[in-house]
Length: 112
Length: 116
Image (cartoon, rainbow over the protein chains, first blue to last red):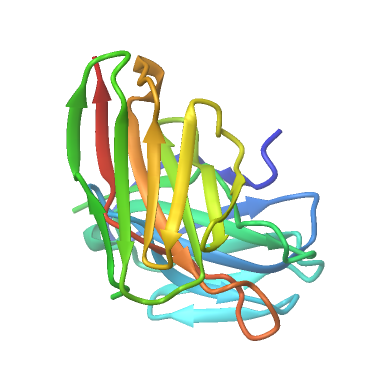
């Protein structure tokens, strides 16, 4: 059973479109992180959210942590080809004594 | 960027041979991790270390062993490689999660292993 479910798995959109990626769980997380991975490289941290209901913005990317700290979303406005990559969410369970739990990722392709 | 170096970056080997992957960090982070990444499975934790000589299993530890004799080095060994261990392996480091740290991971660039 996957503790963190990401959707969609694949997303192919045209440049300029908006999109949202979801990360859902039945478990409560003390924090949740989003990473982006480009081909041939390791994942790189984009943002960490720690407070229920928290919203963080990183240029055209908006991250939200659910009020109950069980889910998160990543919204990209006016996607660009440079946004292409694998987006991974990862959560730290409330106990904090176990390693991060990763979702399987959303592979985004933005076509010019 | 965090100073993490993985070696080798690419390796092709035959079934039944031993393989060791090395992760070296210059950040003095206490925690180190080995993940494998496969299509359809995402990142899966193999083993991790929370200090010198302190290690624990992840979700896919069968067929793998690890050692950490120094803070900066974390070795992943496949005693007898199998084709199912063909994958891209990532090392990561972090500080211990706690009230001042949410356990963000810094990843190496990966080691691509092919077992024929």
